[in-house]
Image 1 (cartoon, rainbow, N blue to C red):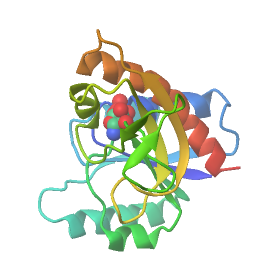
Image 2 (image 1 turned 120 degrees about the vertical axis):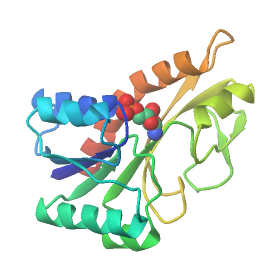
Image 3 (image 1 turned 180 degrees about the vertical axis):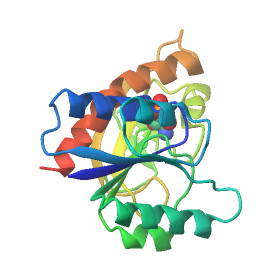
Image 4 (image 1 turned 30 degrees about the horizontal axis):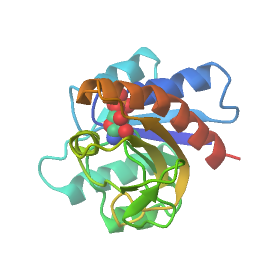
Length: 201
Ligand code: GRF
């Protein structure tokens, strides 16, 4: 399975995938391309350190232009799966339609299987399904006791496609946005590898 990873920032989830591939934990999986919409994304350095083809594709001018370049690179590198790992841009329905069931996204909140507005946690309580940006801060501000991360297939509706993997974490009274991001990422580094393995099964 040839995987292209799209990032916008630190790329610690990209690193988790690189480590899993290099550690023979993802048999049959190869990361063939890393694309960032931010030139200074540390994830690009991680790609280069591991001798992976890496590209900065600016989003400034037009989304259509950026997406056309990304689609061209996906085709050129023959990527089978596109992994959005901390990619902070919304992809158009037109772009998504070119890669049906071939784009997965990592979202730092609990999303229900049915794309609905609430998620029922394992202890039976329900929390709103937080979508879009700053969902970690929202969960904290709303006083939720449970949050987590979800890996799902990308469909035109934002943060709403079929769920592949999901994991919960408890929010503790002492948690800050930083500590919560930290806890979530530790779990995401496992979740993203499991999701790619499951896709490749
Ligand atoms: C992850 O927490 C992901 O859920 C969110 O952005 C973060 C990306 O982190 N969308 P990194 O760039 O993989 O370190």
